[in-house]
Image 1 (cartoon, rainbow, N blue to C red):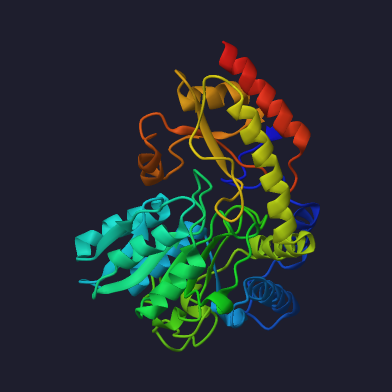
Image 2 (cartoon, helix red, strand yellow):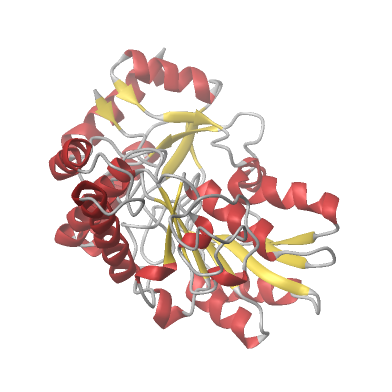
Length: 380
């Protein structure tokens, strides 16, 4: 199989990730931090090693800022529902995934409002200006994606963070499509909340997300329960990461995440980005020469894009095209990609689009095979 659905979840996982998960199942089989015996302590130490690796990778103030979640959506819900109060206003972008839009929509019922700022691809000045104009006196948060999961469009999150702090407004960044592919420095850019899909660019198992913030003690909790600390109190701990991690955590997934972070560090995000962008540029050039192929963005280049490309074939439903590709042994995703606002932005809300995203393991030969498959489907 040629797997080009890495914007949803990366596959294959590096061998060291598989080894770490298997090792944890064999040697870290006890609840971490819930007992004083050797296996419990070993599991707790593995979790701390992962927190430290993640904090170092994103340049967070410390490992205590790293909370493990089910996925990026879970992390985003913790931030939005833990921070915002009735009467608050939020500024977001017009390209957001439903991980942002659905919580914001639900929060409207509690008296929280939001404004979608217009992104202008390739013109960061205009994008920042749109966010500036959307700010109000009651704005309590800027929340936006780093990279559109449909179009690969990069938002100038460093400048948006600076804009927010200029007006005393924190920023939450959805790094689902960027973590592991683009450098994300929390301290230098003063990001307040980073929400990460660890199963994507960090090559962790599915069921792993991360919330990174030095401000976790100021968030209300979505759930409460046992943390293995301060057990005599019926109140949830105020300190991170315990505040956000009730119940038994996913130790095998965390062990796999640590190995995934080490894999990405060994490759470096810069080299991974260059490799994946070269493949996407090759594909864009191939598709641009074919009649009947509709491309929605110019050839992706740094710093305006990340390696995600979506397109359509004239007169063919995107999901039918994806099904035909699947029958030929090529895995992609089509439809709306849980991001109707991004499709509304490009006018593809009815048709959806076929999305292609390579990984560190993708090859030029696989991209050529994909292009040949599209030529065959396009002729039928």
